[in-house]
Amino acid sequence: MRPIHEVADELGLDPAHLIPYGRSKAKVDLAAIGAPRAKLVAVSAITPTPAGEGKTTTSISLSMGMRKIGMRPVVCLREPSIGPVFGIKGGGTGGGAATVQPDHEINLHFNGDLHAISSAHNLLAALVDNALHFRTEPALDVRRITWPRVLDMNDRSLRSIVVGLDGSVPRTTRVDITAASEVMACLCLASSVDDLRARLGRIVVGHTASREEVTADALGATEGMLALLVDALMPNLAQTAEGGPAIIHGGPFANIAHGCSSVLGTRLGMTHGEVVITEGGFGFDLGGEKLLNIKCRQAGLWPDALVLVATLRALKMHGGAPLSRVGDPDLRALEKGLDNLEAHLESVASFGVTPVVAINRFGSDPEDEQARVRAWCAERGVRVALSDGFTRGGEGAIELAEQVQAVLAEDRPREPRFTYPLEASYADKLHAIATQVYGAAGVVIDPGARRTLRQLEEGVHGGLPICMAKTQRSISDDASLLGRPTGFEVTVREVRLSAGAGFVVALLGDVMTMPGLPKRPAAHDIRVEADGTIRGLMRSE
Picture 1 (cartoon, rainbow, N blue to C red):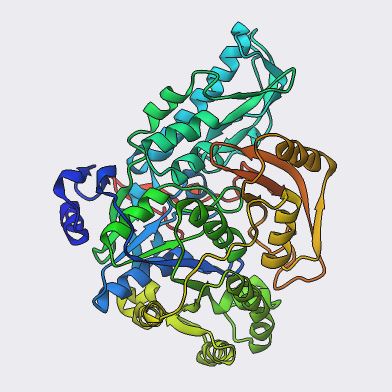
Picture 2: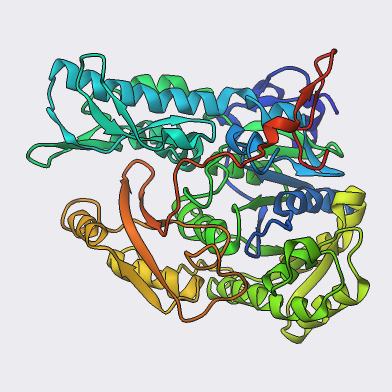
């Protein structure tokens, strides 16, 4: 790894704005953020499968490839959550030759950001129960408290808990994973310290018996929460495995949160780089849609190009091939699986963004299947490139970098085209996302969720964007429906207000805001050697 000050020099950062956290990573002072001037490239993917897509690996290798062809790229990524690192996913810092470094430190406790978010969130939770205990004003109704606690770990046993059994005020609540916290969303969407203060103060924790909202401001929590988050608000500077700048900041999940790295991190990259590469989590129906409808809308940004990542293995699984056989030649399954890629390309087109398909290569991929995907894209006038960054780093991503560079050089209007206007009703917004992005026939809204939406519209919380929480395993809300399902409806079973973040969360199907561990979690494969070296954090190790 290069010393972090050399990476900062390449980015053109004033040394006075660099706050080193050891030799190889640093915080960057908010004073370094100015007007955005770089091009913005979004990265998303087809619907994830256990066969793997490699969106983060592709984002990192694209940055490396652009650096190889003489551009000045910055890759802006989310911070990994410890929960999935020890759960089913393993580390979230790319793979093979396309990683961000120091990868073990990024995967574990990275500059303390997620701990700060957990602490700020739980401070507010503690103040809620303290107000109940001392019966202070405003008088919270114990039946109408909505603020949970959070933990940066997968732990299904905490999804529903009882607190206050020590003689205080007993009540049921839940624990969410930190990546789903509204505090995480507030930090990632904030544009300044003052904006973060305002967002934290607006957080609604519950209601009084007369149904009046109680906010963090009303409980006197805002400044204490902000004090815990001042350092976490500053973006983190790290580097790719080839020494290029990487800004890694914020980590909301995309299946249960808005799935994008921070606005401040993106703006920092766009202030100093030539091209910023950022991603939305999971498939385009989740992270991609939220990147455009939530993050870009609130930040006043819009991508100049979008990379849609696919693998032959994932396409074949969407085409009906069993997981155990996706590495085998199977043109028939591949052809059928291309329906999933087509669905996502149509969604991208609805936003007016120019796509480039990246075929993330596995070493054993048959050449005739690669050629078929290339031909399929050519038939539709879509740019496509093979990406071999996992094996070859930047050299393996030069073709992809050149294709993206060609899109960036095109003289075409790049005006935001959102899925819905903010003034539309919430029911209409839900219908627009379901039909235009998922390809659903319609939306079923359960009575309780419909009642909540009506109350929001009749109060002061109309006109907000929607953050859909649903399975990442399908374009639909049914994880078993692979490929491109048709004729389905999605069901909104619950609605939660995130007033500080500035959106309304709609929970679809059986999605959980606290994941569980798999039968054999990644934690079982981790080992620490005598010199302190950690092995096994990455599933590919």
